[in-house]
Length: 463
Image (cartoon, rainbow, N blue to C red; front, top):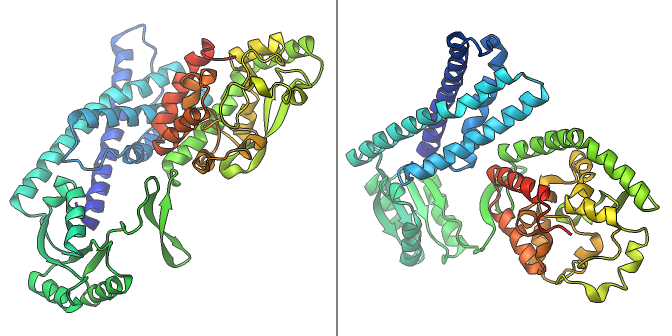
């Protein structure tokens, strides 16, 4: 719906979904508890009160995750397949979050079974709610109850451009009472149109109108008590998305090309810290193996540290298990002619500086394990563009390549699961990083993490 009605319907749908997912979790508990009664070999469940914290998380986070996945956007245009995909992704994220916390809290396997039963119970309930809401909305639109008197102001070509870009369900909610070209017609004509049509909203599509004329027209709407909507298309950007924020008490139009702060980013940060801590605990035997192997294979420190470029290029000290001789940095100059990576990055096929045990560590990415400490410290994320040495970042000549620094660097990214060291072209590497940034979502992070596991276990593309 337009304006406040759209926001109201979003909150109403989220409220219904909160009730439904809470009911779905209770049904999952009841099914699992009933199984213990019906089958002797099935262990009984603790009382429902032990699951209240999980119900609270399900009710609080499911609608928020679905909103970030754009599940509630353009409900009349969505196909059932798209809704199903959004719901599966959203429920999977919520389940992974709860399972992670439950594992950390050492919850027993019988209790975790309730969490796994929750998605198949919740999915049909949420799909049924959406289908009923869509049917009701279509009926209301056909009856004309939700149609609103709207005036469009601006040059005809700008108005047509805006109308062509609007979804069909938005157009169905509007009766265009008048089109006023404020670039040539007096503002008084706009005021007359407001009076004649009893319109409650004026939408300005005025990319080619002087700001003073727009300001005069907006002030007229203010005096009439009518909402004025300005289409922010007067600044053309190919990547950055316009949003509104406030600096003190001053409204600001912000162009962002990275994900803005949200519940989804907060969940990402939580997964980073919890995942890094659990990763260190689970991988401790490999730490011991790496420590002993490096000490026996090569004189020098076990841990190699280097200044890398973090978010926006801020330097931080990154840690790895040492896989090269202690003179590796000095020998880099003499190997410059053998560099097989275009751009500022230095990669050598069968690098002679790597000792035998170090090559094995690299093959299975065991040398990267100390970077989990960087994740715990907040310098890195589990998923993000790989951090490059500071001196390599300083050699970047293509300005657009620096946009990969606009997010926190990570242990793995699309580059890691699409060939790793098989990629020789730095432009292709950056392209994958920018693809990740432009399409970021929590589900994409989870997908990359799961794709990373077989790439690491099989040593795909590692050298």
